[in-house]
Structures are given as structure tokens and as C-alpha cells.
Image (cartoon, rainbow, N blue to C red; front, top):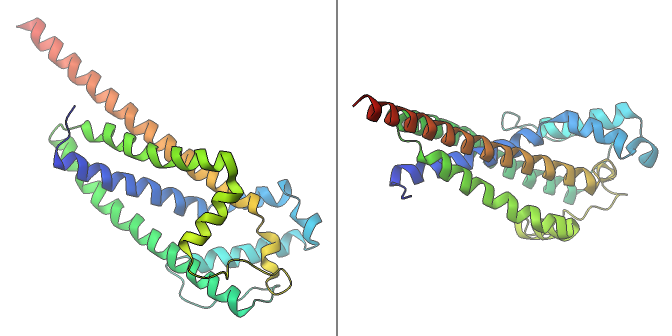
Length: 221
């Protein structure tokens, strides 16, 4: 099967939307963290109340939104200069991802509409192939050694070591255990893979429909 330039362009845009949307959705999906407060026993391990943990996490997540441009001020935690710089860097990264999500939503909506209108459906299959490759590769390395992948990610994305928090200077890190980020990663991979699966099933549906129409026309002739 050969793909046209329109197929490739649509698939790349679709893939970027799926991945960026998955990251944005999980980043702002608070129920996952609320579950981990109990699952990871954060109240028992940190000696903060459930309400304190929840409220300060909500402050952090609200700060990451592209629509919020104020300062980060925790209700119950002090913050070092290095910690503040790190959160500012994280915010910039999340803002870029949110912008990519919004832009690719617009471009993908237009391109998909145009392709379907022209009865071109191959891009669904190509989107599934492109989308599934990245999480499978990352998922393999995460399964082998998530700790190493976690460290490599920070070393690659950040040009400093401010992400190495001192709990005494930045106690917020006590309520952000590495296992929580692993759960976020797993959920992102799941959403991406599920989206790729849906794309492939849509492609199969259209292919069966086309074959059924062709067979019917051949039979009537």
C-alpha cells in the first residue's frame, strides 16, 4: 500500500494531536492523583493531611495551564529558587504541548474532513502505525527500567539539575513520588495505544464498506 503526501501529512498531524492530547489529558486528570494519595499512602508517608496534599496539588496543576500566567505559590510548602525555576521550565514545556494540542486539533480536523470527503481512508491506518511506534518503544524501556528512563528524560529535557529536589528546601517533592509519574506514563501510553487501535478499526470499517459496495456493484452488473 502506498500513501500519498496528503495521507502522510494528515497522519503526522493526527499522531501529534493524539500524543499531545494524551499528555495534556493525563496532566490535568486529577482523579489519578487523588487515587494515588490513597494508593501510595501519601498521608501516612508525609504526615500532611489529605486536604493539604490535594489543595497544593491543585495549585500546581492550575499553574501548568496555558491560561494561567501568575506566580506559583503553594499554600503549605516553601520553595527554593531552584525549585521555582524548575517549575517555570516545566510550565513552558506544558504550554508548548498545549499549543501543539490546540493547533493539531484544528489542522487534523480540517485534514481528516477533507480526506473523508474525498473517500480517502488510508491515513487512518498510517496514523495507527505512526502513533503506536513511539509508546511501544518508550513502554519497552519503561518496563525494563523506569527509574533509568525517568532520569534520562530529565537529563534530556532540562539543561540543569534543579529537578533534583531537596525535600528540606522543596517539600512539595514529598507528595510527588516517582510512582505517581510512572502511573501517569502508563495512562498516557494506554490512551495513545487505544487511540491507535480505534484508528485502525475505523480504517477496517471503511475498507469493508468499500469492498461491500464494490462487490454489490459487480454482482448487479
